[in-house]
Image (tube, rainbow, N blue to C red; front, side, top):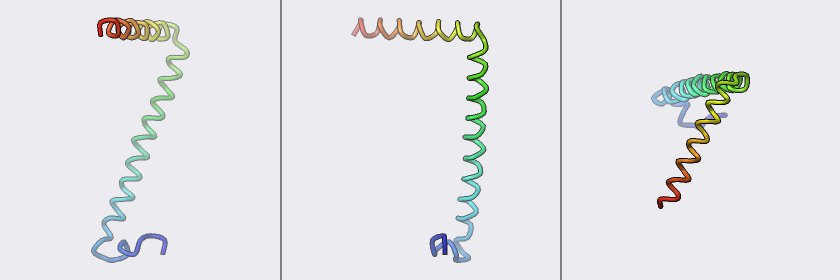
Amino acid sequence: MVLPKWLYTSENSWSAILGVEFVVATFIVFGSIAFLAGTVKNFLLNSPKANRNLNWFSGCVFVLLAIALFVM
């Protein structure tokens, strides 16, 4: 027996189905996130305007953090 003994009873067989469904759904969701992250990375690396806007946004965040640190 590879799986736990309680999975082989007829009344608990639905838990194995739910487990497989969870694994498939997780693979689909995280696979989609990974694919989207790769696409966004390629866009950011190849677009000078996107790179400039990202640098500007990062600079604003650091300035706001410095102001918040100064005020505290």
